[in-house]
Image 1 (cartoon, one colour):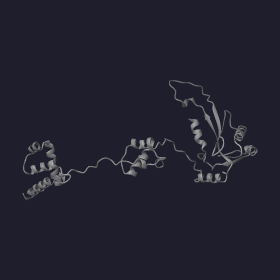
Image 2 (cartoon, helix red, strand yellow):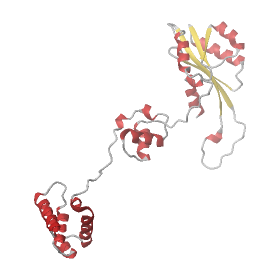
Image 3 (cartoon, helix red, strand yellow):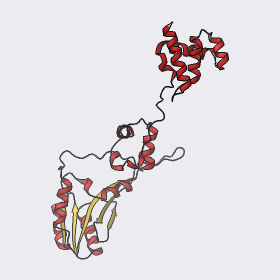
Image 4 (spheres, helix red, strand yellow):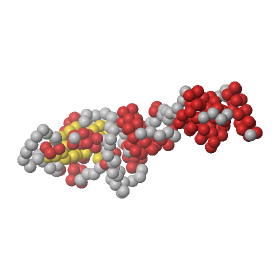
Length: 275
């Protein structure tokens, strides 16, 4: 009996003081139950469902006075400061990997759609297939090219990146409405291009024939006609048969590091042309 009186006294103190987080209705229901009132009567007085009063009584029997206070809720998820996410941080990642990175950085949980929106809509990172690098490529290929250019770039010297590409017209790559039948002989075009690093006029040449020494010499002649002064050509490889044409036209040759076609910016031009 002394324990019951103590419980009643403690609950009355809580109701009178009304501390922060107290569920006053629940406390009154427990007090009436300790005084011997039935659950249906308590429900009528407090205007709640009898099952609610029954649940409160069971909670009080398990947890004691602690159940008379509201439980602290977790609340909404933490917000992400999207301005703190840089393009470089998500570069080369899939959407799932970007999602995991953002969750780890901000200690939050986000959906796949949210990670996609941050990467594609806000940061505007395009979908690009990974560029395969040959295992024979030097690790410091960038520095090698930089050192080679340092001894070449001078006042009055025009530096050009040069490359050639074969483009085949394939109608099957174009989506058409309905059935569309074409002949199987697709014309292929070989394109030679020179793009200046700083000063100079770019040079392009299209040919339906194979790129042999004669075609290559004609292209070098077009480049010389459009640009005066000292010219340096940067390319991946070269045949010794054209060395005479280079000497005759006053052109200097500079090689890219081995197995490093990605250092030639003309590759971006070929990518758009093939599309």
